[in-house]
Structures are given as structure tokens and as C-alpha cells.
Amino acid sequence: GDDDAARLARRCDDGVPLVVDAEAVQLVRGQPGRAGRGSLLTPHAGELARLLGVSREAVHADPLTHVRSAAQRFEITVLLKGATQYIAQPDGRVTIAVAGPSWTAQAGSGDTLAGICATLLASGLSAHWSAVLGASVQALTAQSNPGPWPPDVLAQRLPEVIADLTELVG
Image (cartoon, rainbow, N blue to C red; front, side, top):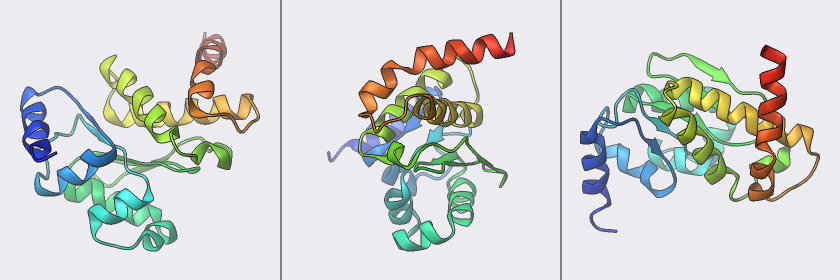
């Protein structure tokens, strides 16, 4: 809507870390650094391309450069969603999450991932670790449950995978 930028600015002023997803991704263009280093931007390749003013093909051809560029330009941690997921920090460091099967890049998976990351961010993890762990646990869940499955069905299987991981680390 017409007041989306103002709503985002108010949420940024709250000082609470945000997960900025979907249509809100484009709103950070006019507010570099406003969401704060504690927040997470979660575009897919098309959204990142629009944000940076490049083609989607350019993002696909060189995801590392483009995700790093966005994190530095907008001073926010960026999770580039897709079958391979890249997490860039404003200081230029990039982490690649555990890769999932190609079917995990289906419509709706990014919304589910944003919710996972928001939950982790709200629990006190940094934006970087919320993105790395959120993307990785989603991928591990897909690997453990060969599909394709719709994102909501896959999300219902997260607790089992998280419990298995918890047992591994003691």
C-alpha cells in the first residue's frame, strides 16, 4: 500500500530486529542501514535483482557478488533464497547454507523460511545465524523427507529433524 514505507520505518524505529521479506524487500532501497544490522533481508533472485537494478540472470550467474553487494549497500544481513542459499553480512562475509533438493525452491518455501528465520531471530540469535540455521534446517528436513512436499507439509516435519540434531550435539 501507499504507507508501506512509513510502516517499515516505524518498525525500524522500534529497534527490534526484523525479517524483511516479499514486497517489503524493495522498501529498503530508500532506507540503507535503517533496518539495522540486527535485521535480515530475505529476497529470492528476482527480488534481489530488482533491488540492485540488475537482471535476474546476472544474479543467477554471480550470486556471491550480488548478495554481498546488497548486504554492504543496505547495511543488513541478506539471505538469498533458492536451492542454494547464500547469507551475506554487511562486512562482506558470505556463508553458504546446507543445500537442499531443488524442489525446496518452490513457491511458498521462501515464506516458510522467512518464518523459521523470524522465530530464530526472536529467540535471540543474530541475523546471520538465524539465516544460516533456518536455511540449513529447512534443507536438512527436505533431505530427510524426500519429496517434493508443499512447504507447509515440510514445515510440519521440522520438529523431528530439530530433535535429531539436538541429540547429535548433546
